[in-house]
Length: 204
Figure (cartoon, rainbow, N blue to C red):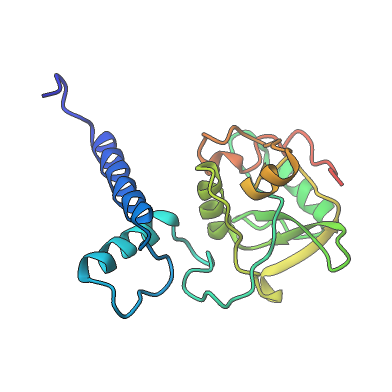
């Protein structure tokens, strides 16, 4: 018996690790499925498959899990821009003026992506909660791309990649570029402009 009882966070982490062990053993046996269960799956297999799907994703709005046929947008990186303790209201207003958008209280999500000709662009979108969930997933080293936002959710597109951003694991693995506004182990909520307040530069 351990000398000290685990904290709630430690207990939940242990459950998560054990759940990963169960999913990995099913994968080793060759029957784990992230797709719809086959007709001959046993109740145990269906339960383990459901567990593995839940572990695979931190679910959030527009993560593509609800509608697997929805188009996704490829991203090299992302960051949040909004007033914080380290970004004054005027600094935020100045950034919004450069982006060509209003300085709305909720802030903006900046997505580093490409246009149809493969040129680097920064997409300025209202998808704040999507970006927070995506950054949390990325911080765990899991590659995922969000659902492409509708035109009404995109306020502007700017040439080049503006601002220091958290790089997606997929882009980092492909290019070896892992520059980030904060360390990957930090909360994604801390990427909301702490570095951008000092400089919003073009990485293109």
